[in-house]
Image 1 (cartoon, one colour):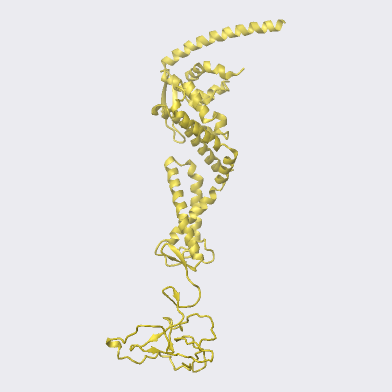
Image 2 (image 1 turned 90 degrees about the vertical axis):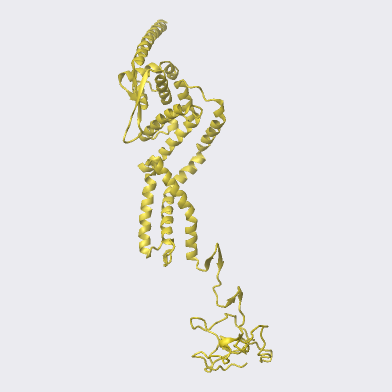
Length: 113
Length: 331
């Protein structure tokens, strides 16, 4: 199954989870999502998601100057973001539980045949 | 491939990519667009720095990137107003991706060091050509080597300039935007000045051509005397009293007998001196009749030579030149 479709629904919570762990700039977030196993995440999607979460007031942002290379725009999670993350996590875990149960039942049925 | 040249190619690639995305975001408010593009520029610079995957492989085409960015950022899709321009740009970008266009681009890229050498030569050539130079501009043994005082100094200056130019070329991609514009300006200037410098070399290596005003005119390389653009075939001299003189021997400013440079002519009367040596500068020339005589020794063009007034009038007899002696020529 193509995970890009699944990602669209969960990218917000995934980005919030990454930033809840530690502040990061766009490419840093992309790398952390990928190393966590979300290989198909698109760079543009992550930057767009960061932008939207920031506009929605779930993230703070600050620029870190750098001597070599461009300045980096870091994002951090704020109280509103943490609340959104907690809420989304509950929803996702419940949803995942439901899906797991559904798929486990299907697998057992498959095995009995 | 050297590290420098690969960096060059990708920095250009990064700039092109950001421009491509910028074109797709043209309808957004300036502030939003600037934010998104700043982040993108930092991002592609980092991508370029860390690997050799083409940006379009990693991120998709600029149009795809922009669409994904808009969708995930919750921005409206591109408005139709910007569509026509964006589509034209997209077509242009696809054309730029055509293998032939790429091959041509690669070829030009590979030839860049040649340009680095040429622009150094133009600059040194201009220094050598600087007004007030009394010595020839180019070395005799090798016309492309500028002469600054001596050809050796010119050669050394040229080598130093080539080194500097190549270093500049190799380092341009990592300079800031302002440095890049300065280099572009330098390149445009040297490209324009290439023409006069080449013209100067051409002139130096073809001395038969002399610069007159804005055009070149061929100077006849053979002997002869010219007046008002026409070759002089004969010279008639009249003294202060208006009488025609015969066998007047003329010399130029260097004491050389004046030669009209005419081709040998059997019908021209031969004039020899007391020692029997041929005298070719005794004027006017006279031409023989078929019987070997000169029919009209006093014949000449219609001239207006009235007697001179003032101090010159009393000098009726021609002043002989120091070495002048009677000639044995017949009239």
